Length: 101
Image (cartoon, rainbow, N blue to C red):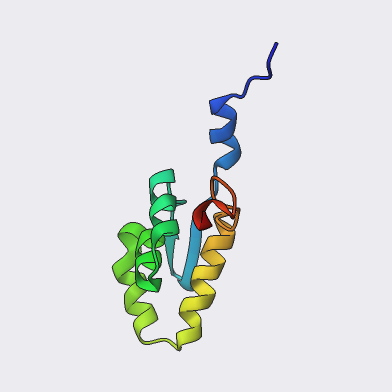
């Protein structure tokens, strides 16, 4: 009998806690993990602004306001931490060579 794979297991294994960005002792932004469609849009994005917007969702305006007055390295570090937190550094579907063929 062929091995079977369980959809519910994929879903439960992929659950990730929100990315909580603490602004100060009394204020934080809780950004939920992106869904599959959002991840596909992130992969297609060639823009830092688009990637940040897709990652932050409804919190984009607030995060963008913070980023706009911060040193440029903040954007890079924040997006990198969010990508790592949500596990988005994995090889894309089809493998790393899929898009170059």
